[in-house]
Amino acid sequence: QVQLVESGGGLVQAGGSLRLSCAASGRTFSSYVMGWFRQAPGKEREFVGRITYSGGNTRYADSVKGRFTISRDNAKNTVYLQMNSLKPEDTAVYYCAAKIRLGGEYNYWGQGTQVTVSS
Image (cartoon, rainbow, N blue to C red; front, side):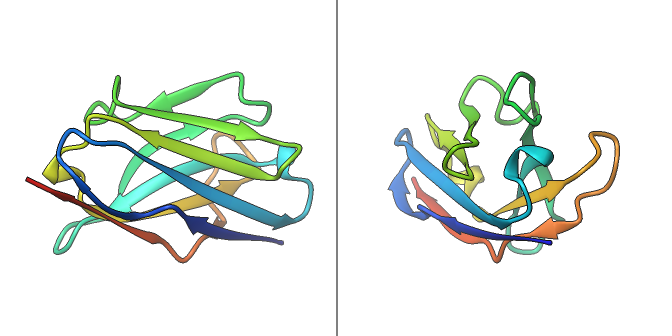
Protein backbone atom coordinates (compact mmCIF):
# COMPACT_ATOMS: atom_id res chain seq x y z
CA GLN A 1 0.00 0.00 0.00
CA VAL A 2 1.04 3.57 -0.59
CA GLN A 3 -0.68 6.72 0.59
CA LEU A 4 -0.47 9.87 -1.52
CA VAL A 5 -1.07 13.45 -0.40
CA GLU A 6 -0.98 16.35 -2.84
CA SER A 7 -0.28 19.95 -1.93
CA GLY A 8 0.59 23.23 -3.58
CA GLY A 9 -2.61 24.06 -5.39
CA GLY A 10 -4.14 27.50 -5.39
CA LEU A 11 -5.25 30.49 -7.42
CA VAL A 12 -2.87 31.97 -9.98
CA GLN A 13 -3.18 34.41 -12.86
CA ALA A 14 -2.79 33.27 -16.43
CA GLY A 15 0.88 33.12 -17.36
CA GLY A 16 1.88 32.34 -13.81
CA SER A 17 3.43 29.26 -12.26
CA LEU A 18 2.67 26.75 -9.54
CA ARG A 19 4.48 23.71 -8.21
CA LEU A 20 2.46 20.81 -6.93
CA SER A 21 3.91 18.21 -4.61
CA CYS A 22 2.78 14.69 -3.88
CA ALA A 23 4.17 13.04 -0.77
CA ALA A 24 4.06 9.27 -0.56
CA SER A 25 4.19 6.93 2.39
CA GLY A 26 4.16 3.18 2.57
CA ARG A 27 6.17 0.86 0.39
CA THR A 28 9.42 1.90 -1.28
CA PHE A 29 8.65 5.00 -3.30
CA SER A 30 11.15 4.18 -6.01
CA SER A 31 9.15 1.02 -6.81
CA TYR A 32 6.36 3.12 -8.30
CA VAL A 33 5.77 4.90 -11.55
CA MET A 34 4.18 8.20 -10.58
CA GLY A 35 1.58 10.00 -12.62
CA TRP A 36 -0.32 13.27 -12.57
CA PHE A 37 -3.90 13.58 -13.74
CA ARG A 38 -6.46 16.36 -13.68
CA GLN A 39 -10.20 16.73 -13.81
CA ALA A 40 -11.95 19.92 -14.75
CA PRO A 41 -15.61 20.56 -13.84
CA GLY A 42 -17.92 18.58 -16.09
CA LYS A 43 -15.06 16.79 -17.82
CA GLU A 44 -13.45 13.38 -17.65
CA ARG A 45 -10.23 12.91 -15.75
CA GLU A 46 -7.28 13.27 -18.09
CA PHE A 47 -3.66 12.23 -18.05
CA VAL A 48 -1.14 15.04 -17.52
CA GLY A 49 2.15 13.19 -17.34
CA ARG A 50 4.17 10.49 -15.66
CA ILE A 51 7.68 9.74 -14.48
CA THR A 52 9.39 6.37 -14.18
CA TYR A 53 10.97 4.83 -11.12
CA SER A 54 14.28 6.67 -10.95
CA GLY A 55 13.07 9.66 -12.89
CA GLY A 56 14.88 8.70 -16.05
CA ASN A 57 11.88 8.89 -18.33
CA THR A 58 8.94 11.24 -18.48
CA ARG A 59 5.93 11.52 -20.75
CA TYR A 60 3.40 14.33 -21.07
CA ALA A 61 0.04 15.06 -22.58
CA ASP A 62 0.28 17.25 -25.66
CA SER A 63 -1.75 19.94 -23.91
CA VAL A 64 0.96 20.52 -21.29
CA LYS A 65 4.12 19.58 -23.16
CA GLY A 66 6.73 22.30 -22.90
CA ARG A 67 4.93 24.01 -20.00
CA PHE A 68 4.77 21.34 -17.29
CA THR A 69 7.65 19.33 -15.85
CA ILE A 70 7.46 16.28 -13.61
CA SER A 71 10.32 15.40 -11.30
CA ARG A 72 10.79 13.19 -8.29
CA ASP A 73 12.99 12.99 -5.23
CA ASN A 74 13.09 9.38 -4.08
CA ALA A 75 14.98 10.33 -0.93
CA LYS A 76 12.02 12.51 0.07
CA ASN A 77 9.32 10.18 -1.28
CA THR A 78 7.94 13.07 -3.26
CA VAL A 79 6.96 13.75 -6.86
CA TYR A 80 6.54 17.26 -8.22
CA LEU A 81 4.61 18.90 -11.01
CA GLN A 82 6.07 22.24 -12.04
CA MET A 83 3.48 24.17 -14.03
CA ASN A 84 4.55 27.23 -16.01
CA SER A 85 2.73 29.51 -18.44
CA LEU A 86 -0.56 28.49 -16.91
CA LYS A 87 -3.75 28.98 -18.88
CA PRO A 88 -7.36 29.22 -17.70
CA GLU A 89 -7.98 25.83 -19.33
CA ASP A 90 -5.50 24.31 -16.87
CA THR A 91 -8.04 24.91 -14.10
CA ALA A 92 -8.84 21.54 -12.54
CA VAL A 93 -8.38 19.30 -9.55
CA TYR A 94 -4.96 17.71 -9.91
CA TYR A 95 -4.32 14.19 -8.67
CA CYS A 96 -1.17 12.18 -8.29
CA ALA A 97 -1.25 8.44 -8.74
CA ALA A 98 1.09 5.48 -8.40
CA LYS A 99 1.49 2.14 -10.11
CA ILE A 100 3.96 -0.71 -9.92
CA ARG A 101 4.18 -1.66 -13.58
CA LEU A 102 4.89 0.86 -16.31
CA GLY A 103 2.24 -0.70 -18.54
CA GLY A 104 -0.32 -1.32 -15.83
CA GLU A 105 -3.15 0.63 -14.28
CA TYR A 106 -2.68 3.20 -11.56
CA ASN A 107 -3.55 1.54 -8.29
CA TYR A 108 -3.21 4.37 -5.78
CA TRP A 109 -4.57 7.89 -5.87
CA GLY A 110 -4.29 11.01 -3.81
CA GLN A 111 -7.22 13.17 -2.75
CA GLY A 112 -6.45 15.94 -5.22
CA THR A 113 -5.55 19.61 -5.01
CA GLN A 114 -7.41 22.45 -6.73
CA VAL A 115 -5.64 24.63 -9.26
CA THR A 116 -7.50 27.68 -10.52
CA VAL A 117 -6.08 29.90 -13.24
CA SER A 118 -7.75 33.27 -13.70
CA SER A 119 -7.75 35.15 -16.98
